[in-house]
Length: 305
Image (cartoon, rainbow, N blue to C red):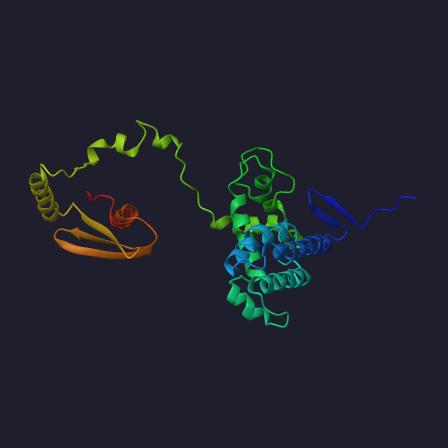
């Protein structure tokens, strides 16, 4: 006689009838513990692996295996007590192996010394990135047809569209798809380099070419350019319909500082100062120009910048 099995394995995912994924977590946790035990033979009597190398091996080779398919069982309102307990035991053994400590060593101290992030925080980070990455899928993808109405490009909507469900039905649904839908409001459209607005002849600088003026700084005509800028400044300060924006940026000790001044009719209006890290001076200057233009456009669109 043939009896149905309690679990079903497909593409490395282990399912059961209640979709608890306990067998899935047990399988990969035991597999990871076996890998950690086998990594002990990488060292020898002459020279062994240093803790930094062990930490790198664990983060790059062990942890991705242990968290394979975590989107199936890690989502909002999911029972995580058993999962975090098994993964915590797995990480405890890995931390003892990295540091070379005793089994009775306190877990929190070992994790702090080895630099291992707690399992729940690491899962939260991976889940957040996975949810954001799902919104970069094509519009005809099945997940996009389930998440939001405005992302679906086809006239025929999916029968299981989340926005078409009632509030009670949405509360009963559990899974990572619901989390993707919840973080949809935090996604902003990205820069599209192939947009028709960036084609030659359709750009803003092509349509309103008389409104833009660029002055390249050369050593040969530096004095003439200074005089030209001075005349433009005097003209803008004496005319109430003109607005003058002065921006600059610099980078020192990896800290970028951008500043902008806005003048109208020889009177200072606003002064903004921004600090950030890990960007170039060019990006800081462009950011200062952008903030100044936005500030001026909010006051009055009749001004000449």
